[in-house]
Amino acid sequence: MLKGKKFTQLQESERIKIEVLLNQGLSLSKIGRLLNRPVSTISREVKRNGPRCYRAVRAHYFVNLRHRQKRKHSIFDQRMKDFIDLQLRTKKWSPEIISVQGKALWPEFVSTEWIYRWIWDMKFSMRRADKKHQLLYKYLKHSCRRRRRGRKRNMRGNIIDRKWIEQRPIPANLRKRQGDLEADIVLGKDRKPGLLVALDRRTRKIWIRKLKNKDATYVMNKLKNICLKIGNVKTVTLDNDQSFAQHYGLNTLGIKTFFTHPYSSQEKGSVENRIGIIRMFFPKQTDFSRINEQQVRIAEKIINQRPLRMFNYLSPDQIHIS
Image (cartoon, rainbow, N blue to C red; front, top):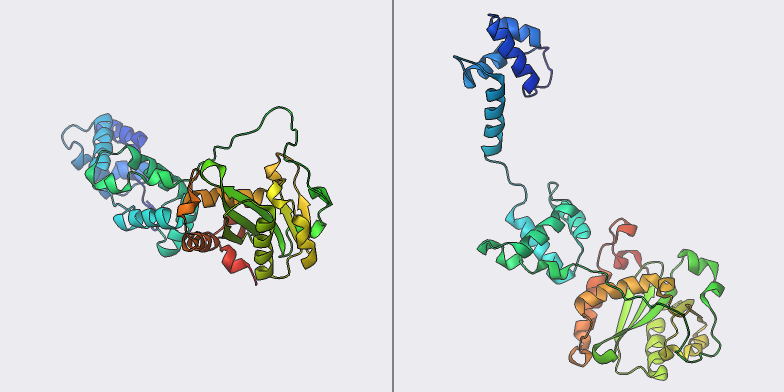
């Protein structure tokens, strides 16, 4: 074999040739030259797998058996498992984000698919050591949206001075600037109001405020306070909930308001996506009367520090410039 050539394991076809050439009475050195292999490789092969009566099929079987039985180096160790467990429980990160952040700490960190498989393996595992990871699957985000079917008739009442989303300025549509918001309301148990959520379309940064009721004046005052805190807000995109009926109150701040079409939540998909993440902290049927302001602010902070693939895994806090 040429000097410097990378070593490769003998293949089954080569073992068959070794068996045939041995039966023909050729020496080990001659066989090595014919197969372009070092004589030492041929010698070890014959000695290890049948010095008296070499059989290629049997030799190949025992080689594979030894490979399966030898101790493997375990890369996926307990520190990685604990890291995944911690990020899922505390930050509600997806397996994709966990994999990217994990590789920044350990180059050998496992892939997204590996994390998913491990989480589901833990769900059904009966081993005592796996019990602490058994419920991790509950921290995965699931999308189970109900879709309205049939005629799309607006039963939400009339909202005066409403402008539809197609009238929204092109810069707001292109997400090239900060200050274009989407807003929505998160409902709790018995469809009682829970949270007001505003999101910057450019940076995906969110602001969450707890609601006591859905009164239009009350909700609009909350939204005004968010806009004043952000500063330089240009547009706000809303849905047709009657809580936003006094949207024109934002005009006094120089802010233009636009509305999605009825039952078209995809027209403000960014805030809908973030609400899906918020639901990981406050699931449906949450009684928001038992949730305090500090819990809301903690959830807001964690979500705004959540790395996003669209920003090369930077967080909204890192992207947003106040």
